[in-house]
Amino acid sequence: MKFLKWSDDNFRSTQGSYLAYDKLEHFLLGFLGLCVTLFFFDFLSSIIVWLSLGIAWEIKDGLLTYDGKNVQGFSWGDLIADCLGFVLAIILYTIINRIYLHF
Image 1 (tube, rainbow, N blue to C red):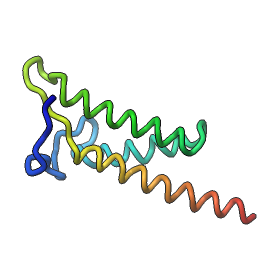
Image 2: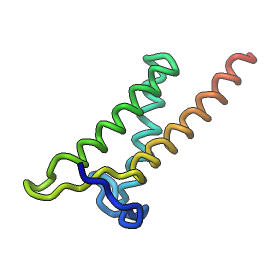
Image 3: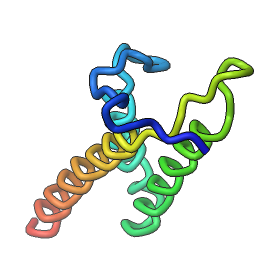
């Protein structure tokens, strides 16, 4: 499995699929994904599902070719961006829960 070197894993990478910036894409996907999943599953299950998906995606990037011959590599930066999105979703979830529990 190929791992990207920390020095090569640029946080301003413009290799996103839908947005210009890859790390922003990971952050938003982690945030929105966890927010949506919290409506359907309990708190811990939601985190486990999205963290597992993020890790599985990076393992896929480390093992499979994207153009038939080149492997992108496992990116710790992508995983950190995912987790930062989770943190924001958890903060919002906690704030909303406290507001609704007090009324």
